[in-house]
Image (cartoon, rainbow, N blue to C red; front, top):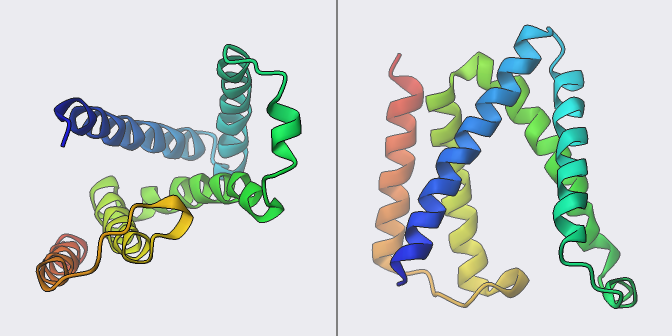
Length: 147
């Protein structure tokens, strides 16, 4: 495995934690996580457009015709996902929220990899991976329930 990709993903994990905690804090301060989330997504949309335009490709729109409409619902999922996190994190705490999210991501990632869904390289589910999931769930339970 390439070390720079491991480092990049660790940094992304840190930034994701920071970003979502900041979003939750804004929602708590303004006492309206929905409006705080809308503000974050508006800023994010403007940023995404600026970044997207740096890679301008006139063929993009003709290529877009080949994208199944259901894949575009990822934008809806993203908005709802960040809102849900911004709403739940102040109630659960950042540590518990992230342990639960990571557990969900690892489990779903293993399922996606096992079946090769959405272009994921096929990596069959094994006994050792099952043990890892059991330990992950046990760890999530300990972090979540130990108050």
